Length: 467
Ligand code: F0G
Image (cartoon, rainbow, N blue to C red):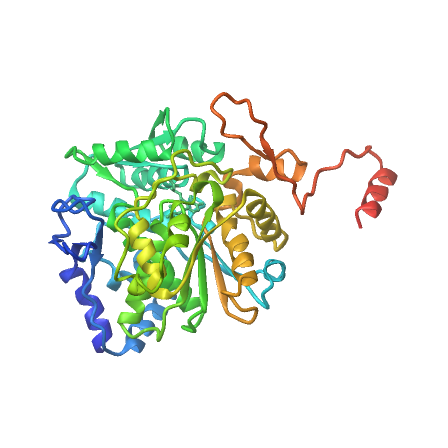
């Protein structure tokens, strides 16, 4: 067996949890139920000790061969890459056959952005309709390994739906803290149906996240938010699947939405591991797009002196949170993202950007993605809105190879979509007393339904008018 494959096999055996703070760098065993560094409070990541030199072809061939296998570990688009995951065989893995999501071309979206071509990796095609499933399969598996009684998370809706489904599958109790009245009805319905205990909290997502961090101390509780490094491990496999779909030709740019910043962290880690193993020759530039009203990391990024950050080796200590985040893209309505440091490091290492886009930009980008026949939720559309801006600013050239990661399915939030097309979409003013008027969003690609008389002539006349 060639060296890379052997090195990857060793990963599970040798992996540790490591504090990312370079001044600390403490390491902990994989069986320790911790979510932040017990020594300094820093963020943890899993260090798989992958060998940087070897024959990448062996691992690629092994992964490709699994496409023809019916072994459930191979059918899953996450466990197919198990050499890169920190679990020892036999794994009591909990799977709903996540991953295996399509990589589409989006010609209309490309034109809208000013690109020759644009590809869209649709993570909304996962079992519960969002990218969260790729991380939840590993997190819930780890909860089973540790013998946890209850898995919990704070959520803007997708994490909760995903946790509920995977915990249900594992026969594990799950409980979710949701900001009351701020979750799309589709996500809430999923979470209830999959059997989680739903705690509606009077507060926003950041309040729920703070409570989760307090609950994490209780020995019966397992925290399934992306602060948990086992979530990131599953989510990083998206980079592997994407590279297989690209036939190992590294795209120039990969662009993702940013909320709690777990997804960007995971993609950055996945690409970095491929580079360390010699399976790709360079990193794609990883850029993260936040919604203007919930953009603490984009704000911080704008103030950075990039030369001083030393390619991500030198990170700022703190980030000012947004106290009252506001966006109709409720999935990413987050003011104090927990994984901001890891994500920032990944972006800086790859020479990407972190920027924000307006509500109008998100809404129009979402509709143009729809015209390509691809339905995503508003939070996902930040990518196409952000790419348009990055092209206009000269960070992305028209002829570059660009992939946008769409994170959630359109049917997650159909109320938003209908309101956009009917011309009734508006962002609440955010004023405490409700005195200020909501800010209307004018749909540039509005497609409102027509009331048509119930006869053939009327229908044909309507068609003609809209041709
Ligand atoms: N897109 C969608 C559809 C999401 O649901 C989320 C996060 C993001 C993007 C942002 O990803 O947090 O990893 O930066 N949703 C979380 C949740 C917070 O609770 O469902 P991130």
